[in-house]
Length: 252
Image (tube, rainbow, N blue to C red; front, side, top):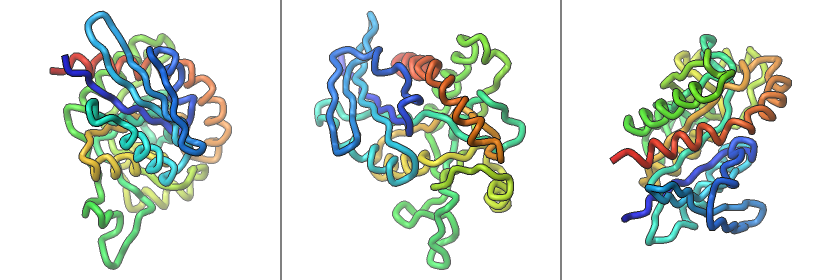
């Protein structure tokens, strides 16, 4: 039986949560201050190779981590999929704390090579919107819905297939968010890593998905909301990751 291999990345260890403790034959590899963990997630029916790390905040750290993660994979068991999961601020005012956003498309809102290229277009791939494969969006959606049903206090929350914007800024005021949304009115969530992950994965020809849980409203209360939220999030992040893995493994 061919062994599947998934790469899991987050910005912070809280977003990986308890995932490491659920892996067998665990090994770690250090690249400067970056630690990459390798192990296997095993069930009675299947065995999945898992390589994971937390990158640190921002696009440069995210790009570094995914590049290291991809290059550390053996040629015999290459990475089949990159899952980037974690938290984000809400841009869409209909979203509430603990809602999920499955990234159908990602854009780097602070990328601007105009007038040589249209605003937001990344010259290396000649695209602005980075589009996730529909089958992976569906897996992410089903995993998030299952998570909501598994965790009692999430029962009133929702899952949205949506539009995520990435930039090297922690948005903590309405004025900045409104300025971003003046040009990108349909974005649902704001974060700092997903666009870099998507770009590298596209250039390396590896399927990818970005899934975010809403932590705050990206406004003046964001820093206070975020610090409290992330402590609680750590307890539940594995629930989503496990659900995603289980569904991924059962897709033919």
